[in-house]
Image 1 (cartoon, one colour):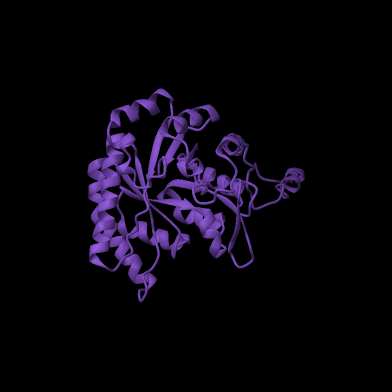
Image 2 (image 1 turned 90 degrees about the vertical axis):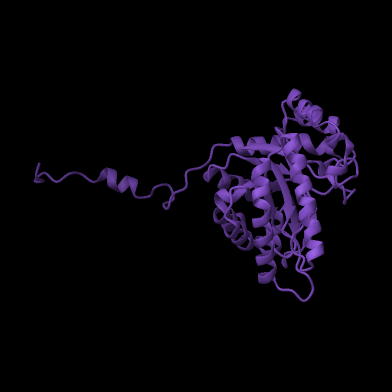
Length: 300
């Protein structure tokens, strides 16, 4: 399992600072979700002008550019709006291909007024089916993240299963699923190998599932250690991508203080020896079986 962080954590850093600090703090990868105030990454001159220089920057620091995060959603009923969103996704995929970045992440999104979730899911699946061949041609995988009106794993499983294309997977965010009270013990096994990347965010929730505040991984209600244990059990070997919205919640701690602490926690949790799960506590039948002798008149 690898660890990385999103540029949402450090919205004021330029690309060189992001990559240098990733290497310094022990991260293996980066997700770009905006850069220096621009969320539509194809418009960032630093990325679009010289993709080879960007590749060298990451390679020289032995850090991977893992994902480009887009704001696009595919829920709209308006054909013109939907076409615009698909065009934006295609721009991200084309940039990712030039940069040698394997993933582009989009949101599931929210349901339009006078629409319903089933119809919206079907429309998203249809849009993804049309985008999948483009992603495959460009050598990019499109990841759909749960959230908005679709925070649970069941809807995300339906989408990825309906598209049924290797160039489409999911980005799983357990923090969003907690708004439904859904735990990793349900969601992670359900999604299994459909998970291409995990967004790792923690927080404190009230009894109704409303997010009260963000927290460092392991200090909130998500159960991050348990989530990582389950992922290890499924032999998940991709990225845990630390994400929290410093871009929008300026009161969150500075990245210089947070990132080293999070890297240490994640690495220790991943490397921790996993307890053997059994139906029996302490193998309670073992002593009885061991003490039971073979009858003297037993046939040889």
